[in-house]
Image (tube, rainbow, N blue to C red; front, top):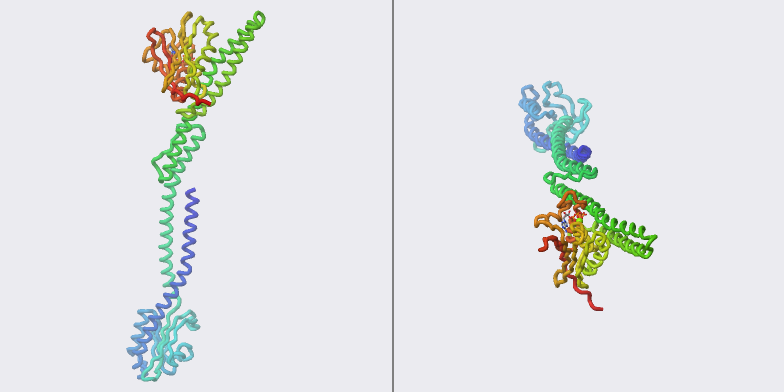
Length: 467
Ligand SMILES: Nc1ncnc2c1ncn2[C@@H]1O[C@H](COP(=O)(O)OP(=O)(O)OP(=O)(O)O)[C@@H](O)[C@H]1O
Ligand SMILES: [Mg+2]
């Protein structure tokens, strides 16, 4: 990309130079021509003044001071000098070889014009010399008489080569400028494209699944640096989102396992009773139906949770007492099978704000844990305590309880007091997340009797307005 940019830059630079330099060359040629003409004209007048005397005396000796002056002038400036008398015959020539003295120049248009008293300037092709000439011819006048004329000629190529050498210098300066501008542009373009290239590589790596890749935020122009910062924020966000998705998948499968076991248990019991006690079997099937419905609700809740970012979800008012009662009823058959007693004390209504299905999932986990920690004959007591600001649900068991340190640790994912226990160690971690989403506080503490008290404090919802 940098190379293509450079080629385009240089091409545009050269085009601009060309467009500028063609009229400039023409202008320079004109200026140079005008300059030479003006100086020739001035010199011609000086020489005309000086040659008055020579024309008066009509002397053409080799040592005539006029010849020396003409020769000195030619060797200095390069212009050829011809001084003619009134008849147009050459009296003085600046040539080393004086053979042209006496030649009739009257037929030359510029000499003929000067001999009429006018100044003639211009350029013409000289057949004799076979080249273009610039000429200036001025008359030599003394007291109203035209004594002769002075002609200065200058080869056109001298003007051309002077203009060309100026143009060459100009072209060198211009090309050098384009080259320097090109180098500066290249360095600048590289400073932009290099960090962009690195950023592109990082993007490719990210697209390839490497979520740890980060762009260097310290290189390049401010715009590129802020682009790198945005890229890194996106990568972190993506990483977090994917981690949340993985957590969700793990949590979801865990949460579905317990009710599925309960459902299977009920169906098994129903099958056993099918022949001997059809009414009992029907009751079990109804309970299984209810459990299946709960599973559906649970899946909905989990899906909702998967859409929540960390932080609070949209909370709704639920009757905590009603939810607790429903969960106790659902667990009763299993408790009975294990020889456990589950009691409940819940003043209804106890409206609280909670994320959808959060309250029932929290209570489920607490009861599940309490049952795992209990032995036959134990009692599990569920209590709902209503208050103005916060309302609490508590699940108290008579199991071995946990030390104060373990009460903290138990909320960490996968932590279990005994590694050989059948639990996955995820239940309380999910409880913590549900509580966070509901704006609730959860904690475990040792009960005075030795068991564990698992509680969740929800914000009390305003009572429903009277209709
Ligand atoms: N009521 C309780 N009494 C004693 N220990 C408990 C109690 N509740 C939880 N624990 C301890 O805390 C650990 C973590 O509980 P958590 O609910 O997170 O996972 P789990 O019950 O082991 O597995 P899962 O809930 O995923 O089936 C348990 O393994 C257990 O050791
Ligand atoms: Mg558990």
